[in-house]
Image 1 (cartoon, rainbow, N blue to C red):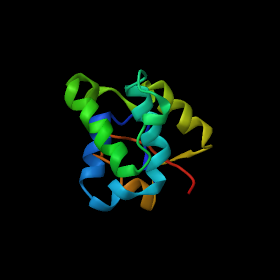
Image 2: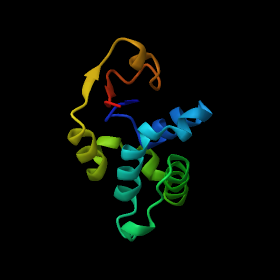
Image 3: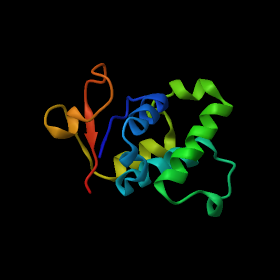
Image 4: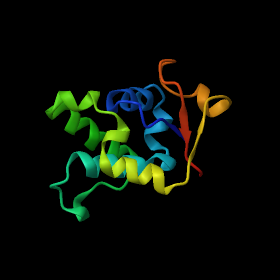
Length: 114
């Protein structure tokens, strides 16, 4: 699953929206869970959605309620930064994972182990 910490939340949502299968990808769940928790720190942990599609909807709803959040990078959200670091993922700028990323303006792609 390619995810770059310098992607904005808007870029991540656009990347997921570009392919319906991505919204159901279980590999996205840890990063989406961390993102949802980071954006809505007041939510009770038991109320956080668990499926990838529900998490995408939760993040999308939060961004709709506060449009400026769309421009925050994934790395700037503490929960996401911690999750990405904890996975032991490495940067990859070439290969299949890099080609699946958002616009070419994103220089590196972080590939999380499956």
